[in-house]
Image 1: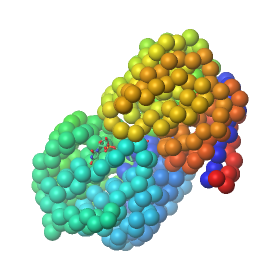
Image 2: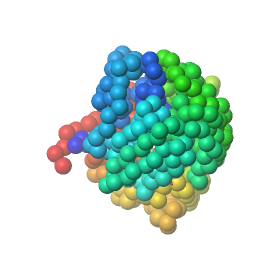
Image 3: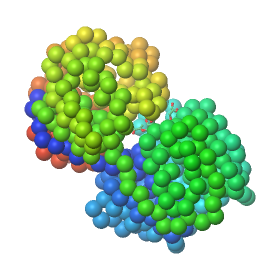
Image 4: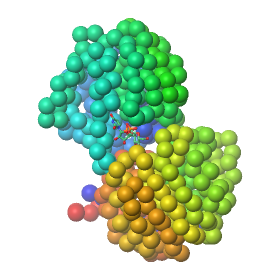
Length: 419
Ligand code: EPU
């Protein structure tokens, strides 16, 4: 177990370059398996979730070469095999092997995925989609056998616009017979990235990025190529760091449209911000105004930035409210933020934040990935030393976080701890 130690209250200036998106990359790597030849994926972030997926690809007989963030994956000799529980439980995105293996081999043996404990996180919509394509599912003690004699396109309505279910059904349907229509599909940019990759292999997917996706099945998928889009959540996290301590901090390699909901909020708070085509420049405003945030699916304010945003609102003048509409348990950061001096009350799915003048460094715990990001931001702005335990949660999603923050003036390091 590692700890992150931050000596806070240092100005942040210079440039932070954003890496490839975790939530795209974790779907693109399993999607590569669907190709009958292989694939090249560029701009892969070096994070532990990707390492866990590469282990699963290796288990399935695919070979992987990696040079400077480019993955060359060969799938000609890959085969179907049960994915053991320990591998599936390492991360949420192991569930994309359900769609990929079902699509390719018409059968998959796998266990319930892991991931941050931020709510119940069922996968019923993924399973419903597979069933509507003709698969039979046997579930016993967290183990799933999903099998189809034949996958046949169908109309699938999602009760919730789930990112995971939308991508998983796309993966299962690309080689199905006939047309699959996903209604109330999720519209997140990561879905477009995955659809572009599959189309590059020869799949026929239309409408990704809208709430109706149409997939006409094909028999063969050739070698694919894709570049992972910039990580809008990593970008948002460092943009918030700039709003807290930035002195003309440049956040580069971003797609501003993907972080627009955050940019609007920062304008409302009077944060000095210049938005350019692929970067932005941000500075702090000690008199920033409170505002309210309601989490929504894309293009609304992302749930994954709700906890990082709370650090900023904790220091704004006035009272802010944050409403989490997607996960039942995504406020575990609040206890630790309050120990650092914030004044936040939880009321069901909403928190009320009374702005304070400063935060003070403390020893805290990263309960999940974005709670950890919230505490890293708190540590950067706090007076004194912040020690964040269980920091491995953060390393699952933020590439080279120590180097990126050190380069712009933060005093931050990792320390081994035996807790
Ligand atoms: N849901 C269901 N049934 C399902 C699937 C989802 O009820 O079958 C519900 C969930 O319980 C939740 C909501 O729908 O309330 C959203 O779930 P979604 O499927 O969209 O989330 P996910 O696929 O599990 C991905 C990201 C999350 C991100 C969400 C929302 C990956 C691996 N994970 O999760 O990322 O919060 O979409 O954008 O892509 C993170 O990066 O910190 C993270 C948690």
